[in-house]
Length: 215
Length: 263
Image (cartoon, rainbow over all chains, first blue to last red; front, side, top):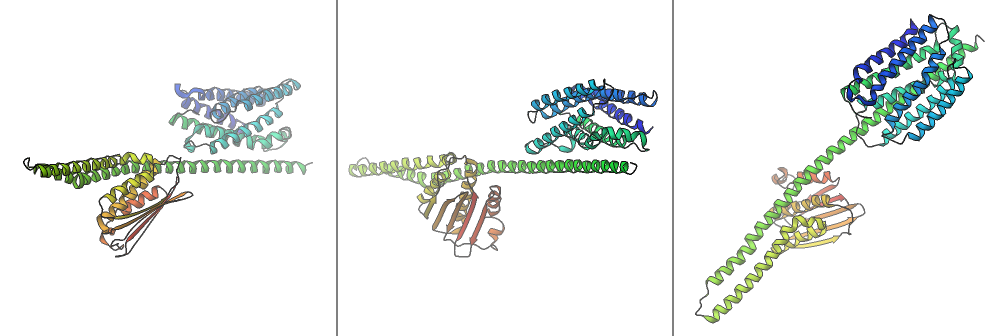
């Protein structure tokens, strides 16, 4: 049951995004609903595969990884581009991640999770988030930070990818420990981080619904 | 091995906690920083609005002062000269050719004087626009007008470089401060000597207006009721982020000093 908390958090975020972002003026924000729906489906598939069919579910998350990379890259581009020229960093990042993903996945016949790609992606996301913050601090625009959706979307991403650095680095080790220990350390950390990520995103969606603005 | 595993897990947990606190601290710092920046910008905007409102008020007051000067000039100078011309012309007796010639010559002289006065008057009307040509010219014009009525001996000392920067708004405020100070002298001081010093030191402009009049003390009901407009002047000086200093004592004149960041 403990393992089913993550899909529930994602489902709640998906429902909030559906309620807040389905109106016509939501623009690119509407893609959040589709992405979150896909994440919920993948999480459920992973849960069923592992607990009911007793199979390795890494391949499911490995399939979700490029989707996540493309979606989050898209978000970062949409949010960062109006503030600074993020195009070269984004294109370069995408090329590197795709190459790394293909190499890792071909090596494992797409059966294992591409942990190195995830580490590279995390570092890159944190770097872009920091650039966004630096530009936000520098510029003269008068924004209400507590209700500014792009800020909370970036904050969720920053928290998730920055704090998960250690668990990403020790991914293989923690997978082994997870099987033996009573308390699943990696899962517990990822549960907290998922709660923060989808919590801040949901908050951003609610802010967006109350005050629709472009990033 | 059993001993080693919990150690590694502990290290992972501690590092994760450190990362968590670091991220939390950073987000907290950014939100506080942006909130403060926003508040600062709002205050700046509010100040700008107050400045703009006061600028309009100052423009109105300068216009009013110009009209007052105009009315006084029409009444005291041109009106008098034209009345005299009228009396001179009315008293002409065509039979007395010698007197008639003299009176026509007098009337001619009076009309020439009227034309001269009218030219001066047109300069007063231009006073409002004169500020576009610089603070010094505008103040000099006001002093010329003051000197013409002959009641005051005015000593004007100025050391002001030629500024390229756009200072029209600031000049208008300073000019109005100057006008108000001068009005106080004319209306209340009973002085006959006025000294005006307009000097510039890098970054600051200093305007000192002193007279040898009856002076006042802060207990003076006129100063207390702000009949001298000192409160209003102080407010404008504050808007310009400058300083105002008034020194006066009974029967020993008044000196008012404005120090304004410039240009």
